[in-house]
Amino acid sequence: MGQLQLKVCGFKDKLPEGATVLNTTSRSKDWAKIFSPFTNQGPVELYGLTAHNVENLYQSSAVIAEYVDKPLEWLARRNRILADPRPMRYPDGKSKHKPLFGYVNKELGRLSYIDGRKLVYLPAYIQKLDRYCQEPIRRLVELAEREQVWLWDFDGYDSDEPFEALLNNEKKNLGHAFLVRQYCLDVMNGTDELVRYRK
Image 1 (cartoon, helix red, strand yellow):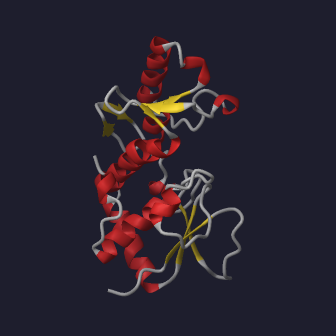
Image 2: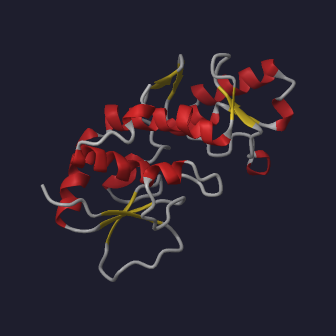
């Protein structure tokens, strides 16, 4: 096996002419669309919760200000998001999007933004890759062994920082393309950067 030539990019990155770019978002026109967390590849199951896609499972854990003292209303909101097959990036509207914390169950308690990534988003997304994306992962690894491939993501940007540094950076969104890249690197190199986040 050769070296894996896999990079992540977004809106602001200027790529080499003729670069191979795979759009990993829900707006993609190519096969890499399957990597979008908006894609219905359910069930996605975590902590006794079930959703049609990764995005809704993650968004269902958000607690915004208006629900802090209204647990029954928040629970109804969560169940509505989990049951809906339509992916919801902003289930409460974009103006109310920023949650105060995340919540899944009493055992985990209130989750910080980074803990929400580690305990909800990553396990849900890794489950998606494990269960529903093995053939696309194999295809991507084979392609990136032959040539440099850029994974385009709305929250992506060119970075060679270690995955843990990206994961713990509160100032930047963690685009799912970074998870795809690390998953492929783990497959290629026999490493386990992501295995600790499986549930």
